[in-house]
Length: 103
Image (cartoon, rainbow, N blue to C red; front, top):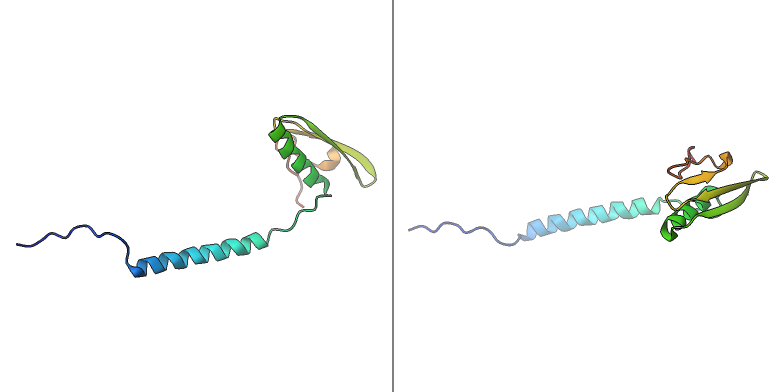
């Protein structure tokens, strides 16, 4: 009479070491990618508009900012629906609130 093998339970030590090595590699790649993110300049008008847009959506109210760019006054309004109405100096997409030119 032969016994039929019952399904394996658990993991071998080799499988565990391979999984830990892969997790370590992924953590290292993620840490290197996180260091490459440049710090934001909070005096940049586009950053101000992005921050105002996040706050307008979170607080469900319109927020208007006035800034001086190249010696000229410019204003932008972030609406609670996520749209942005701004002077053309900002070069901002009205619906997404993102910059239309590369930084």
